[in-house]
Length: 307
Ligand code: NCD
Image 1 (cartoon, rainbow, N blue to C red):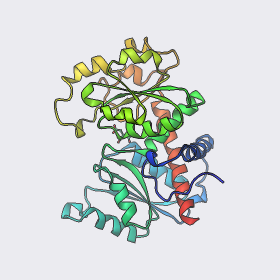
Image 2: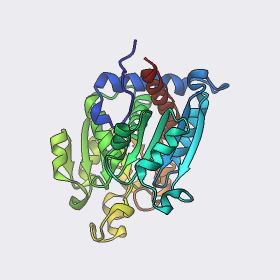
Image 3: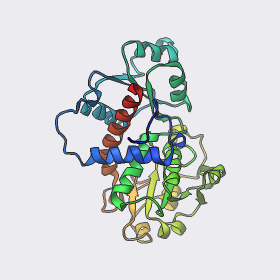
């Protein structure tokens, strides 16, 4: 049977290469499957989405995944909830668990929140983004998209470009892709690229034009304006000039460069529209693969809980 016995998915840092491959293989099968009636894999289970930060793709994608596996879903968003009356995070989560949750998908601005839930609740916990720490299912869907487009991961050079310091997607990509044997280069202005990342086995670069010709994949990360203190780079215009992917810059890249972005994108900052919507871009394929990845994760976690 497959390599999987975790009751929670908190980060890719915690997973082995074999466990990552188990999720990817299952997700790949779901991605290839024509959509039919819901599979009864999660029939009778309740998946709760507990989102304390905005989300479009991740929340809708987990909801789609849960329903395609026959689960009931409950959506919690902080606005309109009793959090505004001062209810604590753990009390909110315990109350939701008491309504019969089997799996809780949580997003929060504080790193470690999913780990706290996993400690205090009996149900399974999936990290849908904790501050600037990890976003494991986004990392997995990025990796699945690369594998489906390139056929393999080992030996590829992947550039992560942008606001690395504040990006949970960067950290999940780094942990996952390094375990699968890719070469990683992180690139951005020095204020947005923490030096300690070299301890995770990645290379650091400050000039996108210098690394672009070596890259098989570029994953363009959004400037996380909401997590930044001001003054980390001189102006948006200068950032776009030095690090934005545009047509002129694409001419420096390999002809088969694969371009990813987790979204949302700031059009005209990290990517020009012609690049975002152009032939190198797999941005919408990432979104489709995201549903398959989340189906695989929910299925594996539910099976581990029953074993
Ligand atoms: C990412 C996130 O929320 O961390 N988005 C996503 O989940 N698709 C990246 C981002 O917000 O820039």
